[in-house]
Image 1: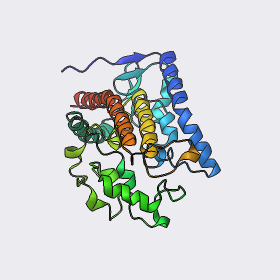
Image 2: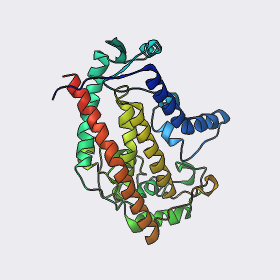
Image 3: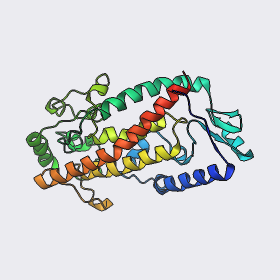
Image 4: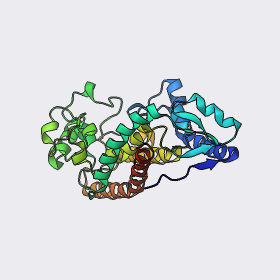
Length: 295
């Protein structure tokens, strides 16, 4: 396969894209920064900036991605960023040392996402990972101790015991309480992550955001933004289906302890799997492009 010719963006073109991306992300970054300045915590949305390590300022920052040349004198300010260099016609992502490190990341990401895409979605976990994180936990050690449990401690434990837990995502499983771990049907580890990831997993689909920014600056910001917005919507469902009472934050529960709630959860899970599929494919394509240009 022959590498494609670079796309050259005029100064007005890339500046318009830069402004549009920043404005799109500020609807999430600015409220977060304002809450943080007031010392306020948000049990749903803070996760997107704490568990995921991409800073709000970096999320707002536009990157053209691979094989794009930014024309015009203003593009020289990109030289202050890691990974950019002067090329024929302007400024572009070009850094052999950075590329070598990112290639290793891209190889893993590509293998993980391809394996995930090859499987059918499993829609039978019903979000019980959040319940397993508080199962038989002392009240003062519950993860979101500022929030009441909708069914109380004993009611929460009964749901875990009656429905069973089928979580295959290691980064959720590692937060299970010790009594909950043996109740999980699967034994996810970092080593078997590629073997277990599947496209119906909410956390796996949220992690598309993580993989997009891990490949920075080789993934264009529009794709990072798409993955972030998917992660926002998934996180909201994740917590609505959790054992916590989030009424004071405006989130009605998805009552997975009932048959109706489990059906609603599975439908939403299937919708997210459909939304995630093209984003996963675009990330795989970026990994392929990175490997092609640098081998």
